[in-house]
Length: 371
Image (cartoon, rainbow, N blue to C red):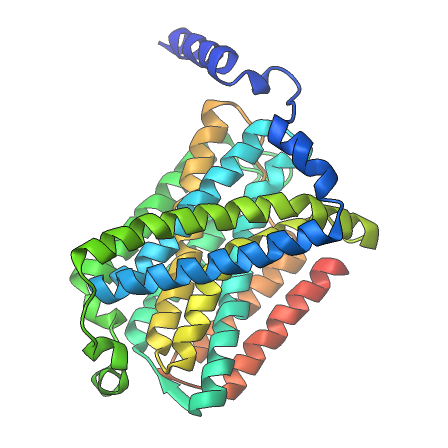
């Protein structure tokens, strides 16, 4: 049986994935775009198009959310972005470029830090600045943060303390178990959020009375179907433009002498733009529950869907994969989770809590530049 599996993998790689056996060549489109990516006007044009795609994605996600109701609407945008992000990570891993074994780690860790500190901090700050004080259901948010803490520990911390392999890496059996455990835990959370305890993720009754969107007429089935298609197209455009801008970002990072991990942070920020904008907009409208559902759901989906898929690809194609983060990043991550637990403990937030999260986020960015 084992020789048969090896034969199938060999044939599949040689016939279907020849770029794993020979140096990758750039497609014609990249040969055309490469000279243009050095032009400032073209980079600015891509940036403007990216902003337009983000606004389009947010609009269509809100249409779907209004039709399906919480928490399904926010779940749609979170999973949509994550699926496309997963496909990009896999494509970059299979390309075999230098440092490809760290892509999944950098993307997942950056997503966790951006969401827990950047997105949630900005939502609480902007919402608190306009609405003075906001409320939410702490039963659901505390559960989500607990699951996120467990997932991040399984994937990003455990590889640094296991002793079966040198360095911050899993063995194949450990990687397989981590992938299965992550998917099972994420599946349990989705069941908890959408079936058994859905009310934990709904706005409080007092907030519903003030929410004009709840009382507005729901969109038609045709409009919802069109929004689903256009949402997927918008997200594809967002991720595609993010990848197109990555050479310019990488060149800027190299010129500044910054670490390579900064490239992963910049790309993660671009990919998370639709969710960040939608969450901030909801917070300003005094719908912090929707903001937290979207933000925490994005981080959970990033680990719960990305790692099992990446682990399966790495094991099947025998690709290197390093997931463990540094001691500095471990400290920053657990500081984020500790402050997050305090923020979400009582079900009410003020502007000060947003400031605390944003300062931690800026500390993370600074130490990424000057580790």
